[in-house]
Amino acid sequence: MNDTIERLFQKALHARQNAYAPYSGFTVGAAVLSETGAIYAGTNIEEAAYICTHAEQSAISQMITSEGPHKINAVMVVAGEPSDGMLVTPCGHCRQWLREHNNDPQTLIVYAAGPEGIRRSWTLEELLPHSFGPQNLNKHL
Ligand SMILES: [Zn+2]
Image (cartoon, rainbow, N blue to C red; front, side, top):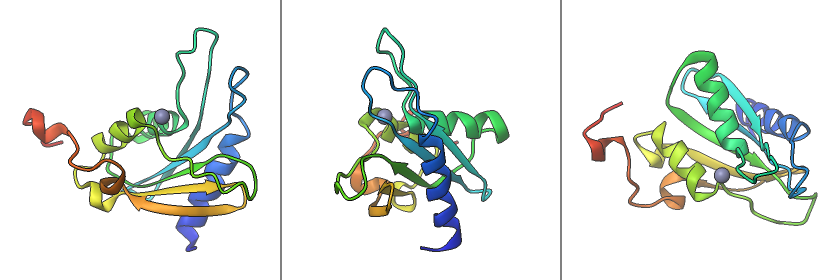
């Protein structure tokens, strides 16, 4: 994998170590690559009422907090155990969050990784075909 994708993986892997998942025990790390080249990481955060923040949402929140909204070119999601082969992709809600920050879902690459490395990748268009986006509300962000 190239240097940028390796950094994206390492940031997501590190963020996962800080997951707060006392209820599910399911820890996730995510990192998004902004069009500026910056990488923002996040992890899942649970609470007793089970209204949780997902790792992808945490990463996008970090981007907006740090540099404002920008196009996202890639997202890395790290979950599972080494060699369990599980493919953890962004949930439907997180796919919509990603869609909000890329008006051409064919250009946003979604990587599913385990602790040992990348397992598979897709475009956001493949995971969220015929998506609803800002242009459906006559917004061209
Ligand atoms: Zn999610």
